[in-house]
Length: 291
Image (tube, rainbow, N blue to C red):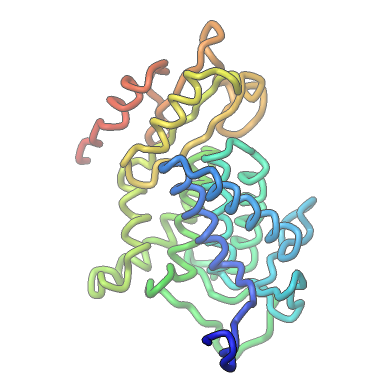
């Protein structure tokens, strides 16, 4: 039988970047298709990254690239793609679950990415400044089977900057895109994620902030409608009315007479809040006017 034959070697290491991509895919697909086990798998993978691959979460975030059997390799610091993909995965998980800790972790990862990988001219290197001294620090801008580091971190910066109304993050995302888009003009086949992030930036970027009690069925209906929108790169945050007293996407945004509401914003300019999934769909279907 097959089991009696010599078995091929199995690559069972855990790579941070690949898990970040899987977390985003499982969370978003699970929400779209009502596959709760997929969302649970995304949470489990994220918890493993936090427990094994991340350190210094109280003051920042340092990410290690690979682990095996629950032990991370201390000599393999995270590359730019690891920071970008894991931050993107955490932001997707926050959008689906409403747990704000994932957004906070993403913010800490991006702070480290800006500090350790920026080239001082708006671009990014693939290796950290604190890593091994190289004759030439690499800088990949082609998206192949997975997003390159520059497009991965640009997408995460754009999403986080939109949520937090942070000019620092939005400017960094657009600067990173500027150099990559020049390459996309000549080789669009190798710029898939770069062009997806650029489309999200051109669309606004847009966000939906939903505020309501956790057990309010209308909050769930608004959240479901937002998750199923086809708006490019839509950023979503969902929370309870108490969140309106905090900084971040919920600041100064509250439910109306106890009823769940959704705020739709484009480039930090918000429309009047809506209370029904149909009203939300109509707002999200509005196309931006050419400038």
